[in-house]
Image (cartoon, rainbow, N blue to C red; front, side, top):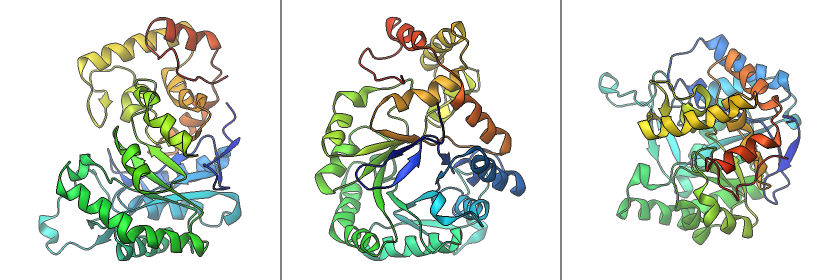
Length: 341
């Protein structure tokens, strides 16, 4: 596939490269990284032709934004699209000696504050400007407003009300001022696309796991609903947090936890099909989502220059149509799942 080819996000007029750069890994999710290698990953993506970069205040508690901004410094501002997240802002901990760094291995020593209010969105935007070293970014993503972080009771309802009641006004003002050009919401689980569309008019959803080579259940309901509203999708975790890149190794990760035996077995069967066609598992995982016409980009992470280059290579690896046909025949891929031409 052509990584530099672009697709539009909804009807926003913002076009992103089919392969983007996901910034979670350079926030030191799984390992502390050499600064030059982390920033070098951003620059290696640029050198390969990638022009869409995604980061967040949450990634390494600001470290990913600092490194993304450093990697893009000096690049022509009108030649790339940058997205980051809203819904959290950062502050220094009152008791640094009690600071809990998890789930990040490294990152900065900063506390996060969830805040989807008008003031919280504005504070988040301004802090991101400073860390990125840019006067604006292009795309804002409402981040982690779901039951995984806030449960299913009064807390999540409070935050949804906060967003709809005043936070959306801040987003509208930023867009009217030309400080953002597209707005989306991050989705970690099924059910939230419907909730967001009940409240807001969005351009896209950033999907972090419900649509991969392993899972396509959202094709039943939520994806068609979003498409009917003119929304696009950006796929933020095409490797299912690891196992679709590494294969079913004993230490493989699935949804940010050790992969259970049934998942390792299914991935092993998918990998066997890929091997029969001379295709790396990671290549099939990375390219599969773009078979859906409303998927604008896939944005795998890269923990350094080597991983950034590997993503580019796997994205460009040719995949015969027979591979997708065999996966469907074996019941390893939905019969109605759209696949790349």
